[in-house]
Amino acid sequence: MNLIDKVILEWSYKTKKGYPDIDNEEDMRLFESMFGINLTEVIDKGYRVLKFSELIKRGAPRLVKFYDMVQSKDSFYNTDGNELKLQFASEEYADLFKNRDIDGIRKVAGSRVNTFPFFLDSKKNSVSLNDLLKTPDFGGKGAGSGTVVEDENLYILKKKLNNLIDVEGGTVDVIVNGKVYKVGSAETQPGMPKSDFNLLDEKGNPVVFISHKKAGGKGASADDFIRWSGYTAYADHPEVVAFNNGIKKFLVDNNLEGLPNKTRFITPIKDEELIRLLVFGPEYGGPNSKENVNIVIQGEVEFKKIGDNKYELSGEHVLLPPNTPKGEYAPYLTAAYRGDRKMFGIQNNEAIAMTKAVAHRSSNVYLLKDGEFEKIK
Image (tube, rainbow, N blue to C red; front, side):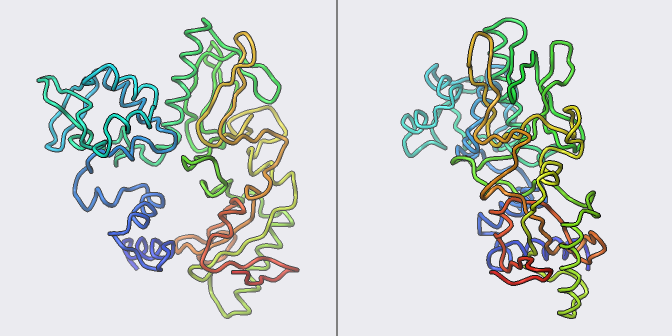
């Protein structure tokens, strides 16, 4: 089986119909989320046109970025591939983008939001969103597109933090889990540890480590993100051993060499300490670090003022150690088909600790009960 066949097979497994449809927007979004490539743009051999719906995703951080790019005289590109410098056609429109006033923008543009002349080019020609290309700044294909959610949230976090610093002067006191940190800036955490971005003190040292999870834009939900963590580092933990033994027994009983397609094996994690290691990082229990975060934030990061120069770090949904996720957020050990994986020596096995909500979201679901898997869906 060649690489293209493997990609199509994996994509097919995840689609609702069992096969992909390039005319189905959900199937195309699924491909992008799985492989980090916007297939529509590949098919079109270029960027798509920019749409308002792309700018207002996940709390509309791209509206602010668009405003900042206009103010900084950064380059935009029209559908002919020509470079443009833009200005807003009026101060009213600039304020709407700056303040992420989605309703205000729609009120001004009516049903023409994608073709409304919000902008002018250097020759004073009218420009609309549909005259522009969806470049990587707005989620188009390109280097770094796989971290677009974190990048956008860090962008907004920095804007908010810099505004606070401008108002307060110097550093600001940020409270996380009852502890006060003097913060002067923020940065993306390099590599792939538990922390996604960090708050830094005035000397540039990281003091607050944040694990970020995306939200869907209509309020945070346990359905909005898949992964709490991998769990291969805990192969000897009794719950992991029992889970994998149950899978191996299932394969023997059903005369299978590896995990079947369109099937997920699941079990809730009971050990609270294992949960903390998976959620907060493998160095949990020691000093905070990139592998032992201070806080898990889903959705847009907020600074809630609670006193003079004091702000509590918050977000749409927050988890602070030593608390563990509950309800639909509760972590489950899961195993599902992936043709290029062989985790724990089990063929086709991709092992992920994910939320309860997502763990149950599969065509066929088997739950571990008394050492054996029982089909529940």
